[in-house]
Image (cartoon, rainbow, N blue to C red):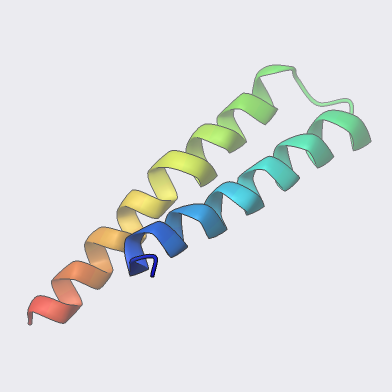
Length: 59
């Protein structure tokens, strides 16, 4: 059974990839923006959410 951390990470990765592909294909925004969305949504956001949930469970 996957842990809560893995579920959160996989969910954010799915959202990040969808957002990056959408940004890349549907807009004329700068080329670095899909990479920034992958980094922000796929790496940083799950870390913040998991840290928050761990702190809430410990309290």
